[in-house]
Image (tube, rainbow, N blue to C red; front, side, top):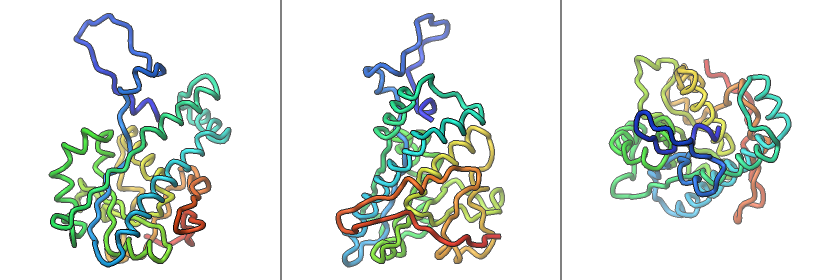
Length: 258
């Protein structure tokens, strides 16, 4: 994964200088950040606490989920798929540590601008802010953002650790198998990001894994089940928070989304 974040400056055509070595500390600045912008659209009583808890849990669980890539199971899986890895376990672990350092959440909270925005409103705003987002995140994470609305923050208050993921380049005609957004467990954020990465590399629709053919309002209670082709990152993404003694990735029964 780290190779997709490596963006060294390009020399002029015909430049014969040796390529920069990504392993050197002085070249770390040429890696792009990865992650998501997250919009807060609800500012009701006590929601500040729930918002801060959500940010804490998303950060912790995503970094913990990266622990999967430190396992021999991950190395074997990538060998089967013929993904190129570094030559040693030590180098692999070092690259995972880089991934952890490069992960970012960019919180956006402004009641005058964001309060009460629905999914459509978030899409319109994210499109306007896309150019700025690309300066902070790799490809602005493929035109996806996170949303903490009233329903999400009230779920957090009930110890249901979820967030909404919204694709803002979604179109109902070309992506008819989904509504372009989904409610996910906070422990599944890395899986979502990796699905977006794989979709980009393979030139396939990133909305296929988010398929949901029932009425859109059903998404308010449906919890995304991930993609069967991906590892179980949630097995690694259990966290402790200051307020909640134990927070685990939500384990839901399989839900019908056809």
